[in-house]
Length: 588
Image (cartoon, rainbow, N blue to C red; front, side):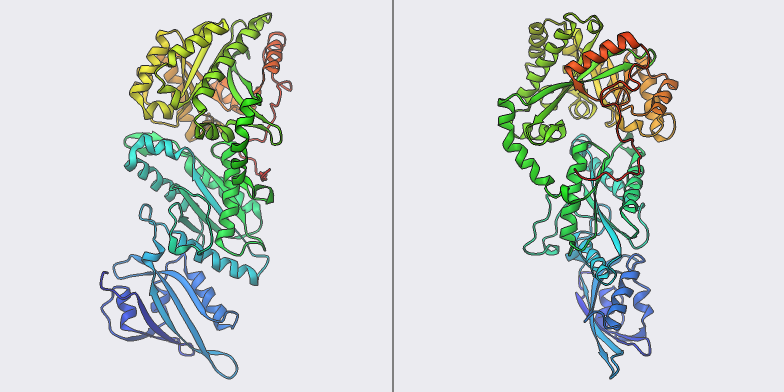
């Protein structure tokens, strides 16, 4: 409607329920009418179903005298059926008793200012601000009123977007947002807020550094935080099914940060900051995690800056340690290999996982040289185990290759030097390439895999199921091992949507004559389900967390003496919070 006015007038005679609508009011909505007098329903009947309650609440508050003026941003159905964002404002004339008898005001078009997301047709930050402002105002009148803001961020979206290309990334993001929106009830709101609308932000407020794949959900009428956690569980379930994109089946997940309203929250900015702090903590724990905000999470974003300043001292003082997680033969329980994993023993913060320090190493340009040193140390550890420890003779070590290392022209030379200096054979070292990295630069990955095999190294495709690798890709890569991503083992991997991926990987490995490892086994039921699917190898907290080198030696000795089910009650740190638990995970 290029020639439509941006504002119009209306006047409601409250006692007779008749409203005088100006010609501009009709023109704003695309109707070719002059001035008319109609019922209030001519207005309310056009209101978007999700906005009716907020419009009526704003009207009731002003008519009752609880609010000095009427103001409500909402969506109205224009001519042709499309909805437009408008803001209605007005002030009532009252009789001697204070009863409202006439309400006159304006209706302004704020469609452009609101910047509704064009990708999925969702509201933007301006609409989010208006919605939360209404809930905050209502909570002042009813202190027991509880609502929550959930900040949702897709895991590995940058890598997926690079893999799929811009158009494919948009398809994935659009469908993910639609799935999230379908999880909400009438009156809740989902808004895409990755691209900030400067007109929607308070002038002196700095919002969190959000990207293009974040969205915010506002859910109201809650009893307590457990309701918000249950909604987060529904969001994870909604994203669990495959996304059909460009003829492939892609799987994605998201992390969720939750902030409940409280007396200290005066605006959407307060809630966004707290939800973002919780989101940072969730992402630090890994993909598909949920974090409920508490005061200890408030410092989470700034912690990364603190860690960055400590990085040089950590490298100089040897604060990084090699830890190892065993891979187990699911049939006889024997340990067949160990994955080398890095940990940072921070003098104040304690033991830190790679989620925290790998981005810092990458930003500092130290990730690749640090990766070479990690591989060297892993080979030396294997050589030390084999010296005087018979159970370690048949083991091999697996190490992750970063995307940067895949591009290194001297990759094979460095690996060859590492095994030679440690006194082990190339076949004792398995290099894990993430499926997303392989598919993002497939030709290079095929070349690297071939060169590694020619040098007699083992090659594994890690995180299988997250990318778009099909049978022909696996065959071209010529890998020795498929490692099924841990996200497919939630609950029972023998049933549900994940079962097809797990079974496909197991059958594909059998056809190609290669090994397959199920990652993330946490419960006996998951183990039994994998055995029924004839999965030969597994790795996960049921057997052991990653442990220091000395503890891994103890596990090897335990395996040699106790035999099958050696891990039952003996593996270091084998207990953990199970997936799907209703227990609230507090920031810490």
